[in-house]
Image (cartoon, rainbow, N blue to C red; front, side, top):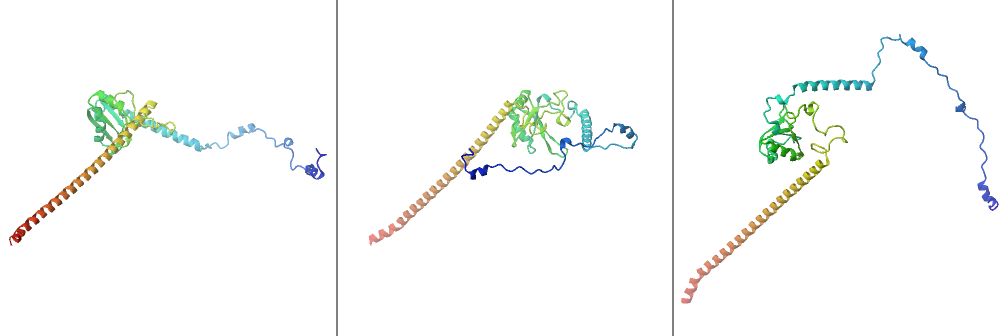
Length: 288
């Protein structure tokens, strides 16, 4: 290969000269020896009597855990006191039948008792509706509906869960305070809701009692029925508007026809009167 190339090309492939030797700036790391460190166990006895009044400081993380533990203890004590006071079975103010009473939650704050009655009386005759208010008279967002018959309660419990009232889906359940032994509401550490368990990955995404595919399918069916009902309502409203416009148009056309008929009649009568008024004059002219 070298014999076949001319000298000018061979000079391009010539090896470079070796690098100049430079002395190292430091010793080799493998040969380097650092300071020798010995233990301090022999000095621990001397520290026993040093600063007897010293108190170790608390780190920020330990202080945070301590505050959380104190807060948790206060909450548990408060819940224990409230549980002793809470006894719905012995409450004299509650007079409804627990096995005929339906619990309705997540109600729109602007919804009235009349609206609730209109939506829930389709399942049966309602005996009473009790909406819960706070000390300032503001609604708490839930109510109790007592039916006359227990089978009406079962029908409402089965079908009304997830019903949309005032653009908000409600949750229905039986009254568990007087029917389930050991039941506790959410404010006392109980409850069945899954919408506030933790983060968005564990919380329930829809309004309902159980998290199942059938339940979500029923909600999709209910959404479809609501959309169809709204569409039918809009279609009926448009049909009524078109019919009212057609009626107005027909009424105007009838008025125009009547007005034209009256005008023609007046013209006809005027011509007849005019001809009658001129006929005696013609007779006199003929006689002359």
